[in-house]
Length: 223
View (cartoon, rainbow, N blue to C red):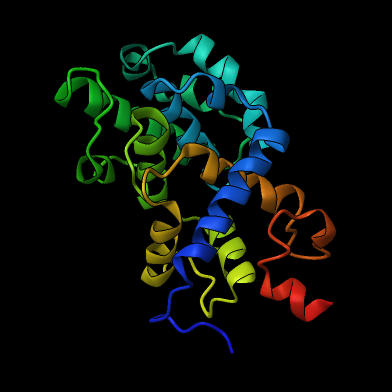
């Protein structure tokens, strides 16, 4: 029977899930520049660029973008057309340039050029959703905040046989919050993202390689 939105796996199961993902990430996690330098401005830019596109695409743009706009102040002064040229290739470049310009101006003018470390404030910035704001708090500021996107929701739902796989479902956020306790180690989230990209594929998942297959209801049913 699939878990209902009111049920939660045991603490032991959640701890095994968390520890297995972190251990797997330590050995198999992907390397990206925004995972090596987690200063707030760089994480802000990475998360804004990563929305609705792939990490591979962002990798081609990320370093040139930071070479052109090395600070909030420089980005806030830039012409939107110049920003648009820099993010060309990611798709939605007009929308991205508009969000990057407006967000940098707001941070420069209202927050002294410092990326805010408050969830409610971040959510008011153009181009930042709940996941992006939570990612900034986790990765840049080390705050223990749960974060759920489509990939994380997919992994949690498949492994734990949860009835919802939507990042818009509050029950998924609550479940991920329970997995992340007590400190929401950033490797947990990077690990879940990488597991979906490399192992827990939506089609033809590589279950034999998955560190969670001894917990996974999908794998149990498939075998």
